[in-house]
Amino acid sequence: MSLKNTDRRARRGSFTRQVQAFVKVTEERANEVVRKTALGILANVVTASPVDTGHFRGNWRAGVGARPDGTLEATDKDGGATITAAKDALEAAKLGDTVYVANNLPYARRLEFGHSQQAPRGMVRTTLANLSEILGEAVGEAKQEAGKGDGT
Image (cartoon, rainbow, N blue to C red; front, side, top):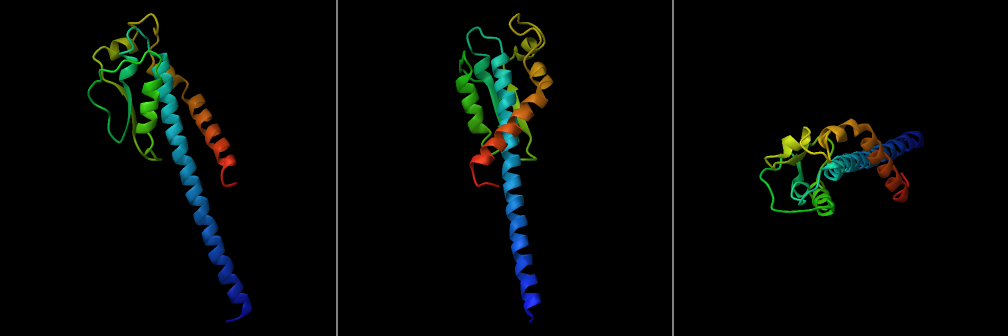
């Protein structure tokens, strides 16, 4: 085998490894954007939710692949515990997954459609109106974190 053929084969293998590494990093970043976007949506919905006892805020949940069912006895006036629980639930989310944000309390629909002076325009609808901003923040955070890591 000539030196030219050997060099060509070596470069081809190196190029393949580089492409595979690029694909892997790109998938990881895309999955991170999915998780950050979903968490951003949930966090916005939670913080936009009206608060009396904190029971309504404490019942927001995230699910990956299946809508969370049932209700919780939890109360969470500031929303911090609810957002932390959602972050844990979203840990496995990846590009292509269906992610759900749900509140199954019987009065959730009424609150979404104006039965609260604290949130007369709802929580979900106002959050979705800001979806491009939430996505932009998620992409920016993922880029920033990538810059701290492996240099790719």
